[in-house]
Image (cartoon, rainbow, N blue to C red; front, side):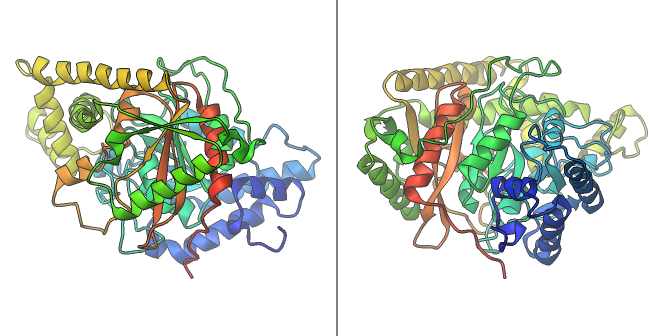
Length: 491
Ligand code: GLN
């Protein structure tokens, strides 16, 4: 390990190297910063790099280790982590990739950011995203798009595309994103890394700028399942600041079982996820992975989840409805951008016109319409009922199987600009990730290899609510079975 560059390590490797005093935290952090300086001009993963803050945090860790603190309560000491710019960072600008919050400096840390710091992680910067997390390609950022480290003409997915690209480019060992309808799982799939959306309520939303409050989940990205588990265990757990946070014990994944966990495991394969729109690369990659899982002793159970096809319509009523309400606070009066106006009404109008980009405006219009008097029952009310039907599909499936296996994204990474003119095409591609979001169950995307195009393919595993430990244990088994991807070098 000592011969390797710190950026080539996993988070766990870096933590071990730090504890063993093979590498100082400052050395590891500098290596990450150097790599960002060399390559992020091409990738565009970061909106802000906090070199000073990161080096200061690293120096504190080194001083504590030198003073004899073994730091056993700092499971992330030595690891460098990037944070999506939708999570509040004290003293460090948090913009949501929007002109509206371009100059906003939070006076506090999000709960999850504070947990990472407590765990000893060095936070290296804030990553690019679709504005207010609305999108699937990171092209809706008000500042610049992010490019996929596997192919710079393609998107890394979104909305947490900056965090995904930062891990795939090895600018950071791991990262936080947020997943409302797939924004961690889909970019993880498109960049060949691991993304875990925990159960809704498992992780506090305190300090997360709200998009759709009944769906938003802070979620880790990592190179490996073990690293994803490490981050998840650091951020999960109850928090009194968030009324939907759940107080249940956070069980640890069993990473000692390896692929043997697959023996006798009942894996549900819902046929609705394997429809016509799948790329040949994706269906071939999934088929190969499922065959290998079966050969390792998993029992593949084909089943039907009949309401799957309604998830897109349901989500694209509910999420914009919640967004229209949440984003009402950006009115130019309390904080954020303020444009001039003759009176209050024109000040509101001018501020929101200048502050929000086209996709955010589209969502606010859609959501306001769906909630308006006379339409509420036909749209919002009905979408809530369909959400219940989708939940019933999951309850019935989990009566028969331990986990579900599906594609994460119907396609591999697509070209920048390919879907920007057609919002519906962008929305429809969320079909595989939306159901688990609407139902709140945990889901993870794991790379299963490269397609003929040379681009990564992601497998989505889904478990019942609060069964993250099962999900991670199974994913670790699959990772051991299929082997890990080596990430692109960028040189
Ligand atoms: N792509 C979905 C959307 O645009 C999901 C976004 C997310 O999970 N934040 O709303």
